[in-house]
Image 1 (cartoon, one colour):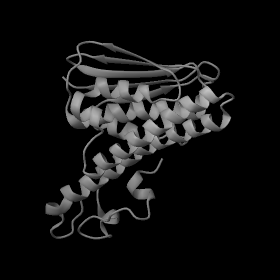
Image 2 (image 1 turned 180 degrees about the vertical axis):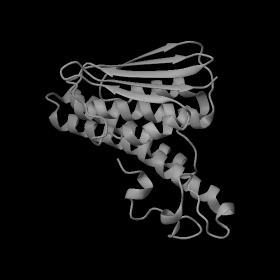
Image 3 (image 1 turned 60 degrees about the vertical axis):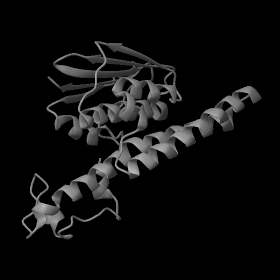
Image 4 (image 1 turned 30 degrees about the horizontal axis):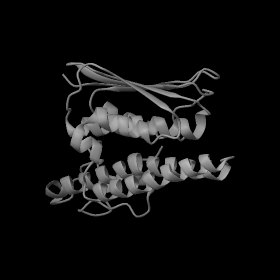
Length: 232
């Protein structure tokens, strides 16, 4: 999956000019005069673009699925419930957009940490979600928390779009050494990592912390996404 900034025609160039996409090395730096002092600005732009893609886009997809439920609801009560959930989701999405525009992570994550943020994601999923937390909840570094958040968000969104599942189970395990998130569903399985699920880009984020991200999805037996990041 292309990185958000490389696939968008309006992606910002580095402050030192368009040539830097060509001459930059693995670190993303380039040799242009004065580029070093401006690199943090470019890196922050990339982070915001990535967060918009990984977070807000998945939330918008969930809203689209809710809209489909309204179209297909066989009874007025079901239509009213889905419409209420859609209205709440739109309000939440607008708040997330405002926060991300300012470079701030989603409000539950900033205010209460990853456990509350994961529960908030579960609460607005179109598929029922069971959340289990093992170990004492604690705050993690902001970039680490955001990575866990977006992995869970992407996994939930993929289940809603592709899995035909009736339930999702999230197990979040926090120890002194690492944080592990396992997101599994009872859907049709057969997911192929790298075929547009969005998890390929997130694997890079996880790897930046020395962690791992795996997808197990045998046909007919559901899908499990497992992420581990050391934090000791």
